Length: 114
Image (cartoon, rainbow, N blue to C red; front, side, top):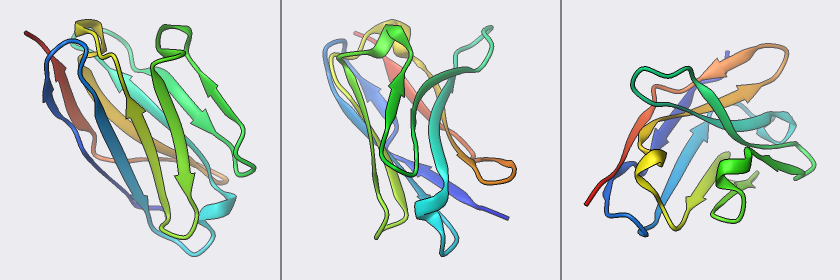
């Protein structure tokens, strides 16, 4: 069982930045495939970014050039740096870990509004 705890959400004006963090349990974090998803009101949960155990990253087109996913295997933490935020980025953001199964955090709210 992998437990995930997100933090770093909040309210920000358009053009602002936030950094989300997700701490994972377990001694083999470096083997986990990690990702960030988001779910906006009335919409399906969508994949935002992923990072493999080897550090390879992938992003949904709408966040390319604005968001950066990274991981610190010593701290068992994955990050999502979000810059140039737009109102359409408003959603609950969920951390995801894949290791023989899917694991989810509880989510953290990000609101982008003037």
